[in-house]
Length: 154
Image (cartoon, rainbow, N blue to C red; front, side):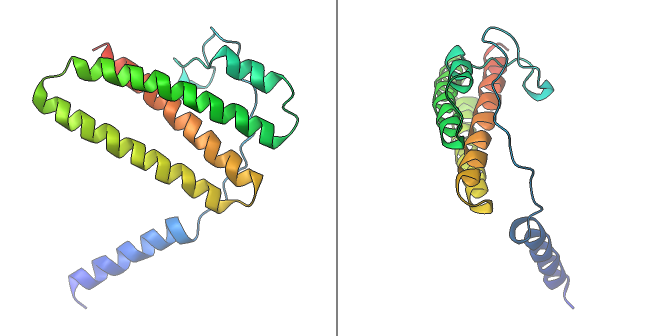
């Protein structure tokens, strides 16, 4: 066999194993974040605050999964505003050459986030898919906003 054929076969096998035959992911449980003004206790989001509106939304009449997803979607929009603000502040300090690369990186990151999170809605049926996709978007956007805020402060 030719080496390129073997490489292609191995690549296809790998992609099949991660894309076509996914390992079941535990269902996300949407719970209220810590009170606004306190740091999130999740080590991956150590420096991240959720809005008071998000906390209030989840603590109020969110007995249904649909209501919880609406809270998550609304918080994602708030985190996108935060991310955009940090992005604009970070890019304003860059020279032209790195600025172009940074713009490209951000565009690609948004495409990746959207593709990755929409994938979750295909893995699960009904509201669980919506919940997983919404949680993915919130987590990714919040993490990216924090990352951009750190870049802005360099």
